[in-house]
Amino acid sequence: MIAGNITHTKTRSIVPVELNALIFWNAKILGEFYRELNNTIKALEYEVIATEWKDAVNAVLWNEEVGAWLDFDLLNQKKRNYFYPTNISPLWTGCYDKNRTDYFVTRILKYLKENEVLTTPGGVPTTLMKTDEQWDQPNAWPPLQYMMVKSLQNTDNEDAKVMAAKIASKWLCTNFVAYYGDKQYKMYEKYLVNGDGKKGESSGEYEIQDGFGWTNGIVLEFLQLYKSTASTEEWKITANSCYKEYKKLII
Image 1: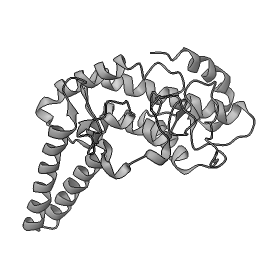
Image 2: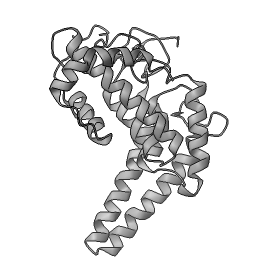
Image 3: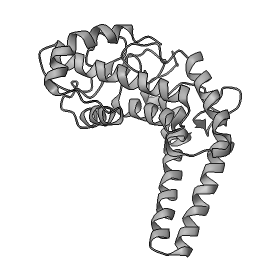
Image 4: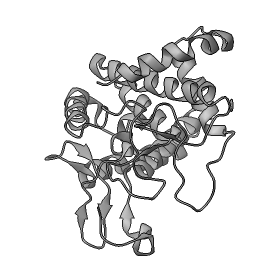
């Protein structure tokens, strides 16, 4: 448990991994757009930004000892050694030296296994800290499952791709068991990683939202990504067997 409460949060003093990985990606995409438009000057401008940003991310945020990228604390001038799914987001956006792909993937796989973040049956936890806050255990959020899966799959490493498929399978089962299991037939904004396909817990600021845009989108993305041909009726019939498989999906 970390001392303090959310009034002590100093977000402006934290350099986050995923934000900087995304800024790199945006610059890279803009450079590609300008290439398509034959605007060489602007293309070069954004290509330089992307390269410099990538170099900075790896110089400042990569932790050789831990074997992952870590958020940086500007106030205390040190990396924050806490697990978040976003710690591997440079693999998703390509914000690393591709000539060292095997090295980065090997280190990341070791990091994930050492932190036992893949042992929870319902998906990857948001953090390893168990608190009353919705962004910590036992909640898991759909966008972070997607980020984990795409980060691992994008490396084209077979071990990483197997791990990505297992995460996606767990998440699909969690969603479908929750959808059919409580007879509410709803998709929720978050789910429990250690529950039996149950919606996530609220920290009190609002009721758990159903709907839900990113949940629906990521389920559809995973089904498409792994070429699922199951119809809704087939999933309805197999929800119970999915639950049984879901209970076995401990890596």
